[in-house]
Image (cartoon, rainbow, N blue to C red; front, side, top):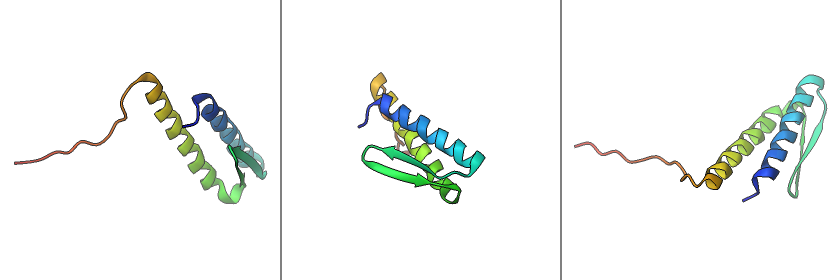
Length: 79
């Protein structure tokens, strides 16, 4: 898993890219590790999905760092 500092940096860059696209319509390039992604107004939903993915990764890394277990569904039986 990528370290928390790197994930936060990527999130900050992605949020800045979303702002730039929303306000100016610019084409923005974002890099995540070896992967380069280009975003524009036409694929703003893909950038929003990428931001959500980073937020989930950050939450998981914070849970792991704090020692809290991963939350998951529990089974319920009736009768």
